[in-house]
Amino acid sequence: MDALIGHGEILRELAAIAATPEPPHALLFAGPESTGRVPLARRLAMYLNCEALHPAPPAGGSLFGDPLPPAPAATEPCGTCRACRLILEDAHPDVLTVRPGDTLCRPRDGESHPAHPDSADIRICQVRGITELVARFPFEARTRLIIIDPADRLAEYAAPALLKTLEEPPGHTVFCLVTASPERLLPTIRSRCRRIEVRPVPRGEIEAGLRARGIDAALAAEAAAAARGRPGRALAFVADPDLMAARGRILERCAALAASGVAARFDYTRTLAERWRSDQAAVRFELDCWEAFWEERLRRAASGPREAIAGPLEALRAIADLREHLLANVQARPAFDLMLLRFPRATLEGSTEEVLPAHA
Image 1 (cartoon, rainbow, N blue to C red):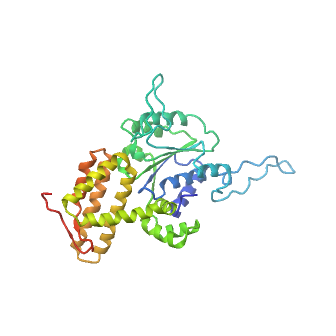
Image 2 (image 1 turned 180 degrees about the vertical axis):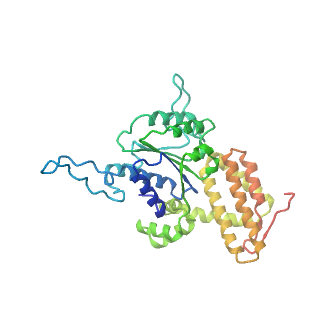
Image 3 (image 1 turned 90 degrees about the vertical axis):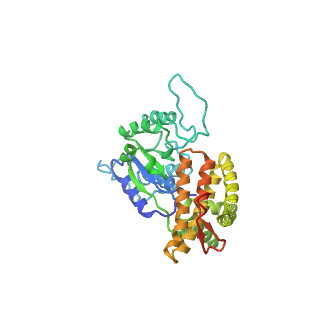
């Protein structure tokens, strides 16, 4: 299933980019997770390589020996040619995604090191593999496309190594850097990329996109509302109904903890830090639920006194700061403690917030 929903304006921009004789050698897709950054990069790969958009020159000539005119070109990827099918199936040999781990790992000549599939960063040995790869022509594509996701996880020496490749780009490769934190990239890397801002998708577009995929109308509406502008999250909800139920349980826990005192919050952060060591994806999902909880309270407070929005805003800033701390690999337990202590105390009914005592 194509995971792309919405982003019509960006799609028009990508189509125009692909139609130019010399497309940019690097693009930066900047935006929140699950908003469609990687599906957009893959759609660019289809624009660049679809056989309907780039048909082979016709063989032979006319009756009088003149060359035949080129076959009419489509305006959108067909989705059915070999290139499109392989890209949609994440199986194209020339459309690669490099993530933290050991994809394209290339030790120095004469050296070796242990495999690192669980690495938290994109290492310099992986960038070395990218450099060796792009020095060769693509296996079968018109244009090779390399997605680096997330680009803000490039390790200390990996980022300058990638910069060197971006400064001397090969003509047959396009890089797509994906990040939710573009400010964490080297300014020199950002300056060499064409930036694409990927923003949350309106709820109505997500719901329509789900229904177009044959999803029941009620489930599509519920998933679109819960996704908070993130089509990838909506698709995950409809693919796994248990995930939607888990979200409901977490939101109930958020309400109870927001109404609790310091002791209960510390008990929670202890278990949260333990889970972070074993299942970071689940903890990030819980943080998304906390954001949804406080965003809803912020909407309610917006119609009341101006000072009522201070508590939810501080809570949302605390979550954003925690995400930055976790990216910086600080100790998890103190970071979670600080976030929960910055949350205001809120009644279960949602009518008031109060700041926890300063000595807490």
